[in-house]
Image (cartoon, rainbow, N blue to C red; front, side, top):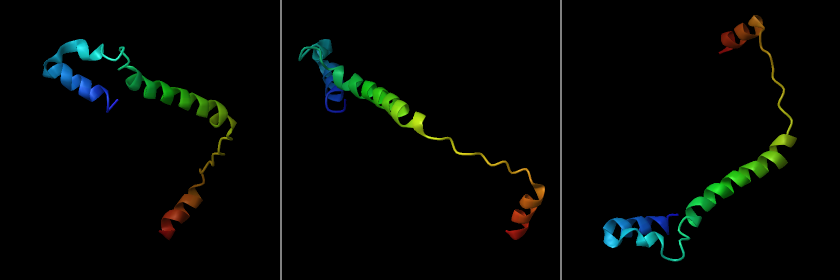
Length: 75
């Protein structure tokens, strides 16, 4: 989008009008929407093939007051 959308916005504001968006077969929106769609698809693929197959870490319950006191006293 940085190499296509910015110059088109500038030329539209500079006086060439909205014809800059119809030039080149109106394909200006593909570099803008493509990375967003690709990012969403990539995140979905990562979630399905990697994240769902990972084990959740075990949570430690630290309710022992004596252990907490010892940690505080040592520091």
